[in-house]
Picture 1 (cartoon, helix red, strand yellow):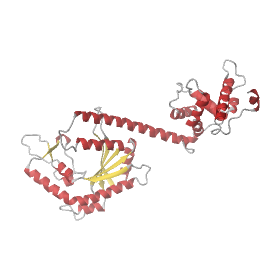
Picture 2 (tube, helix red, strand yellow):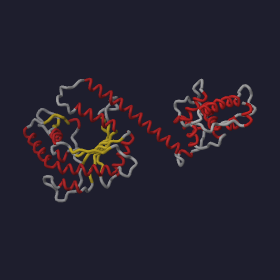
Picture 3 (tube, helix red, strand yellow):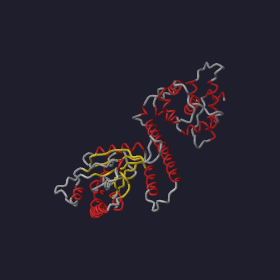
Picture 4 (cartoon, one colour):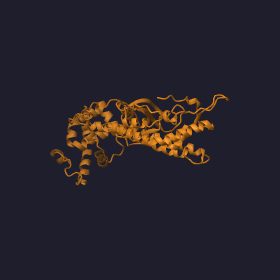
Amino acid sequence: MPARPSPSRTSHEHTSSPELKRAVEASVEEYVRLRPWLEAVTANVTEQIRGVFADSELKPLFVTSRTKSVESFEEKASRVLSATGEDEPETLVFPDPIRNLNDLVAVRVIVTLPHEIREAANLIKKARSLFDCRGDREKDTGSIESGEYGYSSRHLVLRTQHNDVVREYQSQLPDADPNPNGAYFFEVQIRTVFAHAWSEIEHDIRFKNADRRAWSPNFDRQFTATAAMLEKVEETFEDLNEKYARVSEFWNPRGGGEEPLTPARIREVWETLLPHVDRKFDDDWGWAAELVAAHGMDRTDQLCELLEAEQIRHVRKALDHRYSPGPDRLLDDLLLWQFGQDHIERTADESDDDARPRRASLTRRLRQIRSYRRLHPAEFPDPLQPTTANATAE
């Protein structure tokens, strides 16, 4: 890969030397001639990149590409190195831009979430029969170390391997090799859809504005604020995605759904599904394991079924909780809703003393549940019926 000039000497100033201007003009003319073949290369490598994801679980939102415009090529080809001395002549940053520039062909892979950037990069780099990865870096317009914000993206520099479309392009080059090798450098940018939208708008306003005087420091401030907000949005969506994956695994009958309901597992499920319900501060959820085990519940998916949101809403309405219940009370009420009198018989000792009248409390709450079910016959056509003995008592 051609060596890049030292960043400390690179300048976006353009040449004023007549001799260098003529060299740039000649390069631009040559680029205009070669661009149709480069467009064919662009289309070819874009399809190859899309093909990398064809059989993978990762599906980018879209894969797009571009061949550098003539105007952009001329602007970049005209850049000069900053002089280190008064007598030093101007030097072009890219003396042979057609061969020096790696971004004449560029592909963009746009994904949904930040972790997919890494997955996409790994998949592309593993396609060694198509590409040889010669560069891989994170590019930020904002630096985490300096506390700034901006969009970030993963940039890969790839070289094609024995590509016939590239060979066609190489055969058109001046002093073309009679046996072209089909190797060509191009760039792949991988970023999230939020970063993509931010960078496109920022680039249009900040770099493509026709009048450089049409600028306000408030624009910088707003771009920074927007980048910060988008970063938080990405973090939130990433968190939601992780929680969704965890909950899906709870229901997987051949995965997390079959895991036994140990006290630690019950706490994990509870904190994932019901983070808004006040949790016990101690680490011992043995009480919960005893309650569910009384009904033969020993699998994660069984607990998830018990904790379904609609069931919780009915329990809250039926019992009209005076105070927002904690996990112990809510789990007890959900089991009472599900199993009725059987829950009382299995978990309330007949010898309950008056100081902790659990059986009496459960019986009162069961009456409320039955009353609620009778008031909603369409939703509960088969309400929990009392046992014969309890029916007489009522």
